[in-house]
Image (cartoon, rainbow, N blue to C red; front, side):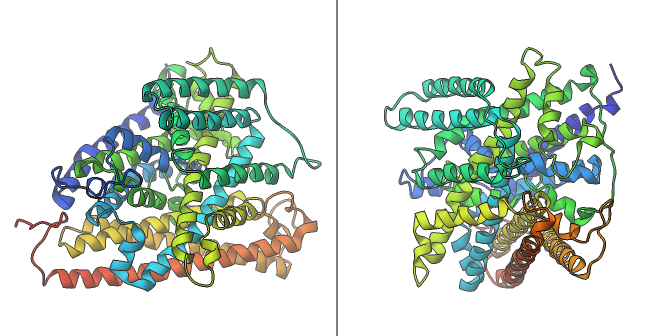
Amino acid sequence: MVDILSTPFLWVVVTIGLYGVAYWGYGKWIDRNVWRSNAKKATPAHMYMDGVEYFPVSRYVLWGYQFKSVAALGPILGPFIGITFGWLPALIWIIGGNFFIGWLQDYGAMMLSVRKEGRSFGPITYEFTGARGRTNLLAFVLFYLIIISAAFIALIAVFWNRYPGTFVATLGILVAGLLCGQLLYRVKMNVFAVTGIGLALVVLSIYLGVLFPVSFKVGAAGEWNIPIWAGVAVLILYVAAVLPTPTFIQPTNYLAFYPAYAAIILLLIGALATPFTQIQVQMPAGPIWFNSDLGPLWPILFVAIACGAISGWHSLVSSSSSAKQLDIETDALPVGGGAMLSEGLLALVSLIAYMVLAPGSFGAGNYPSWVDGATRLTTPFLGGLTQPVLTTFFGLVLVIYALTVQALVTRFFRLVAAETWSEGRFHVFGNKHVSTVVGLGIPWAFAVSGSWWALWLYFGGANQLLAGLAIMLITIHLAKVRAPSRYSLIPGVFMVVTTLSALAWQIWSFTNSAVQYLQGTPFPGPNPDPVGWILRNVRPPINVKAYALVALGINAVFVVVGAVLFLVGLSMAVRLFRSYRVSLTEARTKVLAAADGGERKT
């Protein structure tokens, strides 16, 4: 048995212990003393029950729905970038971000919506900041959803291309989801029987994926593979976005939960067993204060590792969906906070999967190396399964984490587009088919042109800024009812400042690349050709000198996108901070109240 300190074992135990304190200590205290949740107070699920959007759901079922709706590739691939600054800073952010900010946002967004009769952030923002503030928020969310869609579509294409067995396995799960949806809602079959059938089909899908791998090479080096695979992903996502939720998304997400969560459990077991399997940490602990490709540790690390520490996407799910299904107020902590802390465990085991790989395993295009680390951790006790089976399984996990959440993102884009453009001269964009095509077509173009670094860091910056804005909305509500607000105000300020700084850095980085190329500055490295400045930000097949003008144009587009995100986000942040100050002043003149709307005892 090797030294425990040289294995991931200790860090898993420490993180699980601290997450336990976050939930049963800090979380329970906030729930009891700040929000004062009341199990006897009617929730919107009961007040407006319509069986479509508003309906009470068991906390256990709703927890599963919340987890699968928020857990995507962020906690898996974010640590791939984060570990370039050393695994210790990445681990500290995964622990500290979740402990003080992550669960607080997810739970707080859910409670805010519940206290506002199930309203989503659009109407709540209108109440707090007026019509222009609501318009700013919707504009920011639309740009954000385009960026997150581009990142996920690109990654789905990469995974299908890299792991040939995953495409057939993915199709198998989608078909199984469609079948299970029919059995549940048309045939009215028992849910346990349907689950058994669905899980059997999931296993069969993985087996068929191993037997019938799908691979091809279009172009001399397969450089056109990603655009083609991304197109396939877009077609599937279009169907998922326009079909009724119970027909496709709901049963598919339900089935996908099982292999997705099984991967977390298997990796936790693998990490806890490392003193016996003798698998050691190989990556440096750090901190590495500056990375030549990415920039400084602050603010880049804090947007590179988004989901798993804190994620703005979660606030949209909590406020727009889960809050409408909350049975009793006291369920908000286990559903919102519990699901977020569970996602933190996914970020933890993903970081460990990278920690046990040799430093040479990391390169700008090798982010699927998570599969290699996961296989390395689990092979000692899953030795009966062959390498192709394990590779297909963990590759499939990557795909379904991306595909199932991206289906919700696409659907959410359609709903926001309808709310934004349902009236006026641009009302055509409110049509569900038109908005879905736009919401997938633009991201596809980004996905097949922009580099991995560009897409991911813009996604992280926009995602984390949305989280900061969501926390400020929560803080304004607490200020209005004279409940303690500093516990959310401090994280909100930190996230807004950090993410605006990260977006500013990215804008400067793309601008600098274009300027250096136009000035003819030699590119650092073995090939000093100035064109390297702009080619590093684009994806094959256009990352060659012949497409220099195209690459320059794409760099310019990224500058514009970053500037729009920054300016709209800054405008929204200013409005929210002003609203917070006004709310504090107004609250002092009102009857002392509590976060639950009742009289606050002194």
